[in-house]
Amino acid sequence: METKIIKDDEEFFVFKLNKGEVWLTNLLRRHILGQVSALAIDKVTFYENNSYMFDEYLAHRIGMVPILTPKDVKPSEEIFFTLDVQGPGEAVSGDLKSKSKDIKTVYDNMPLIQLREKQSIRLECVAKMGIPKIHQKFQAGLVSYDYSNSSSILFTVESYKNYPMAHDIVKNASENIKTKIEYYLSELDKIEV
Picture 1 (cartoon, rainbow, N blue to C red):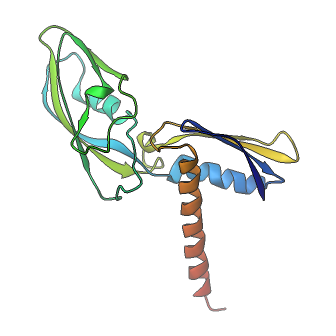
Picture 2 (picture 1 turned 180 degrees about the vertical axis):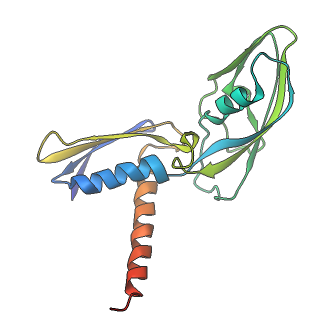
Picture 3 (picture 1 turned 120 degrees about the vertical axis):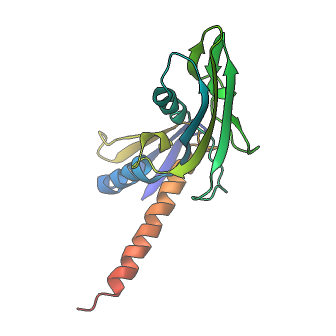
């Protein structure tokens, strides 16, 4: 299967599969949407919240903030963040401070909550690796393909910038698929007929 890269940067990876198989393209798309792991805030402990927003709502908003996912993060590793803000003013994703120097929020200006005079929030969060099949907050990007041209398939990945480059998402998915195929083949070899 021939591929031609059309765009490759940190936000988009667009490539054309010449004479590609739709089932294989869909396998890659579904794997990216459901199996590519990324960091996301999974647990939030509130020490102070006298804002108008319930703890659960604010925790959900914080959980949806994209976090940079370095290649060397282990699946069981936990990364701690803190948030300590006082009103009046807006609390944004950049106010979440990581205890790891390499890991931070992707966007610093995502609004979390508008605080009024004498309102404050103080909390700790734990980020961990997860897959989008478990929760949307672990999704690394959007994926689509177009096979309206019968001789080729146009495949587009739009990254949430959790990974340094958008093509890293496709590489991660491809490696996961290869690992699963190898496992299935080894299990099939054990069957005696």
